[in-house]
Amino acid sequence: MYRANNAVPGSSLPPVQLQASECATANAIRLTGREKEILQWTAAGKSSWEIAQIIQCSESGVNYHIANIRRKFGVRSRWIAMMKALEQGLIHSP
Image (tube, rainbow, N blue to C red; front, side, top):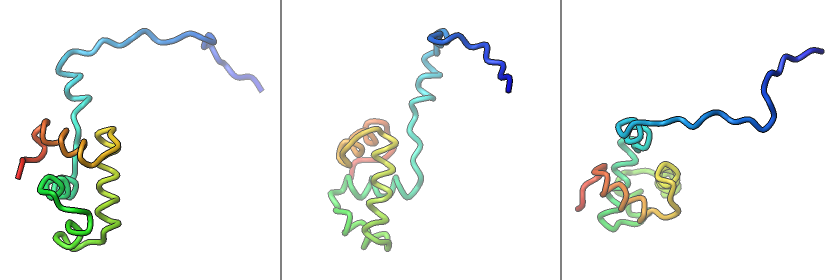
């Protein structure tokens, strides 16, 4: 079977130059309403169990949202994610 493959091994595409506004848009974190609510309660010092009681869901559901939040921010800790959300104005300090 014949495959037309014109790519040269080891070649790479030229680097893309982004404008400042494009970089800010590309790095913008988008959180759901539930994720913002959970981060807001985290900022108030609540544990996963306490947040689950407040928003009436399971503790594992809260931890699921926290894992998504950490993934979006690219951090390992809920506290670091909370601080980044505060810095970016996604949530407000209690």
